[in-house]
Amino acid sequence: MQSQICNSKKGNMKTVHSIPTTHQTNIKKVRFQSEGAQLVGHLYYPPNFTSAQTWPAIVVSGSWTTVKEQMAGSYAQQLATQGFITLAFDFRNFGESEGTPRFYESPALKKVDIQNAVAYLNSLPEVDPTSIGALGVCAGAMYTLMAAAEDHTIKAVVTVASWLHDAEAVKLFYGGEEGVKTKIKAAQTAKQTYAESGTIMYIPTISTEDETAAMYGAYDYYLNPQRGAVSQWSADKFAVMSWEDWLTTDPMPTASQLKVPTLMIHSDGAVLPQYTKNYFAKITSTDKKLHWMNTDLESPYHQFNYYDQADEMKEAVAEATQWFAQKMK
Image (cartoon, rainbow, N blue to C red; front, side, top):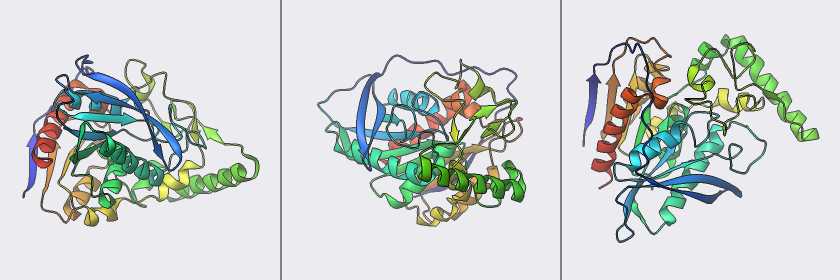
């Protein structure tokens, strides 16, 4: 059993380069159920896969609003080359998966979807049911930690640039106390409208001009078609009713319920670094490790490098591979 804090030197990146796409893995489109909704995912197999044995498996989750073709798929593909069967999937209400209202962001529902993704992997004959782990990037880390705190079939967890917030933290990003209250009220109104008429109220997911957007700013990952602005993702639809669910979710108490080996990868330049440190400190299990990467980029701008940039992904995947290999034996 171990509790570690590691540091890795990384300077300011003058240019950024996406990690190369590998074609060494075999990809299979799959479907499974989550509370009556059919979810669609991509199952990635190791290059040396054979059905003569069972394999360790990992469910990979990306940030809020995202689809499987973004950071979840990138990490799933890279981890598959390291000898794991991996699953990246569209949460309900997003991408190819079923579910309404469309583009409705609910951490509570996503937690359940991850648990059902684990159950799906557990049903596959090629998967070792005693060796199923979960990795989450950004908000996907929040959903993953919430799921793993309840689901003991998840044997190990890795978080990358975790977005973890509470009632105070959301004020820093969403206009202070008044801004948060306004968004929650708007969400409640949108839920009432949906219940009465079936009409879904939307705002842009990302915008450099519309201040009401879910993400307002020149965040290249979500604006650049060579990065995260893929055709399968919606840049113009975020369900307003999502605000209440998003802003009132507090994953921090789950740290004391988390019993599985947990590796958290983060940096001072990623989002809310102190919250990741706080969560790590509150994990009651001693089988945990905090891998802290250094950067000259200010918070939260290093966050986006973890989504697809070669240096960050290479180190994160290497750390995750070692962790899963050790902890899911």
